[in-house]
Length: 74
Image (spheres, rainbow, N blue to C red):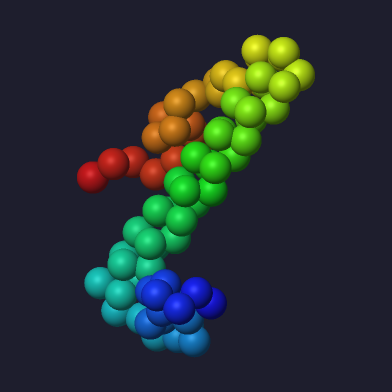
């Protein structure tokens, strides 16, 4: 764990024991982390497409936020 990274307050807590507010907070944080991972993958794919000169590797079928598995913005 990084020195200044936020600690997960709900790491040891079962989902069934959390309140609705806590559950939503954890879900939101996990979705943000997922978006960060997707952005890093996209940057990597752009770099790979430049090196291999395969432009089709760069494009996604759906932009981030519009993919079928992405959550709906509220």
